[in-house]
Length: 217
Image (cartoon, rainbow, N blue to C red):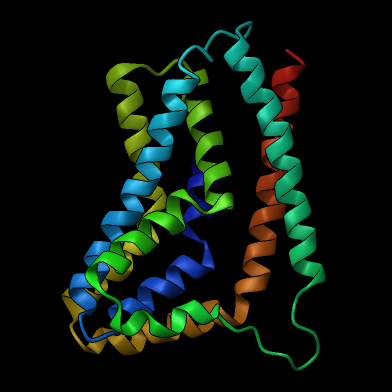
């Protein structure tokens, strides 16, 4: 589950969003709410998958077959998205720009910050695929009850490390941390295409390989 968790953590747009929110007028409050929404979104998807594929630890079960076919489809989709993202990358002197909806995040309301965190984690197609794949792997490994809860919690923690780190830096560093966070934001905006393509292609190949391996058992 570690590669999937790190891929979620390195998603450019959520990190850009949390930095913009933290730099806003109510940055500390909204940053904590965004983080709460982010963690809740990931945990909700992981819990749902764990319930739906609770018998996937049996290689001959229907749940296991569905999980493997799902990985094949998801892996192929991630690779296709990576190729598409690279094909549509900014050319020559064009500069990558964050989505327009990020422009108003510096003065977002509490409810919007919470909802945005949940949507960027649980409703993001890439994160949805990676979270589902990682959780299915945990179930297939035979984790149940406390072990399953601990493993899912660890996945959510690793997948949230960049968001948690940004919020922790803002709370501990005060206004002095804004400059450092803005440097991170600029780096992510500039290199978002390359980061996203690498993550999609590598994770797509990994998920696809796991699915084909499972079907060949």
